[in-house]
Image (tube, rainbow over all chains, first blue to last red):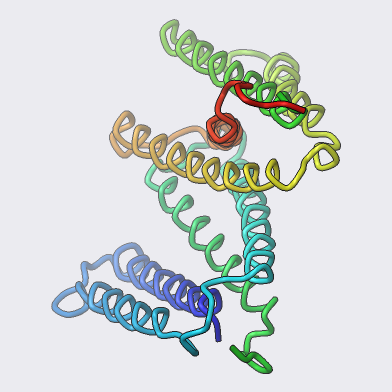
Length: 147
Length: 146
């Protein structure tokens, strides 16, 4: 597994963790209408630092001293993945601007606190698309790769 | 100045003019307390719909067949600029969201206003990416020889 794949895995895990945290907050605060107590309030922070620490060690560790950071193929894969995430961003932004009109109607209103949530959600989905596109292009495994 | 640079200048001009006009129109509407919903629906569609369709059409015309005029360096500049544009658009959306939260005191906004936000974010993207491209080209044609 090369550096680009490791970063993609890290992004994938980080994004999924953010989604889990977001769903947890929505369920606790907006559905159950209670603020998390004790460890439930802070579990996201240690989990974030744990994943970041593991990822730094994991990404810095090379397969061999001769391994390069990225080659032509890696750049090509990253470029296509970024393109896919850009396309998904615009599709999602377009959808997020059209859908509220159909839900609340032409003269309806939406709470402004939804805007940052929508933006953050789109950002996470873009990261997810980028990571998945990178991993899908590499074939998900390190099979056949030799430094 | 090569063709890619000329196209970048045009994109910059169109996006800058669009954002400037939008800012002036929004300021005018707010100052005079004009309610867009007072207009009849056909007028709204003609004025807002047709006028706001002009800049994206201009951008599409400028970008038409642009890949044919790009060499390796232009492509590299374009790729970097697109990433800066995306960052700019996200900062704009975050800033606009924060501003709306402050202005409405956690209230609500009309649903079609979200379309305006996304529309402006698109032009912020183009403006930032064009500016980033022009920065990378060096703004001037100094030292370029064909």
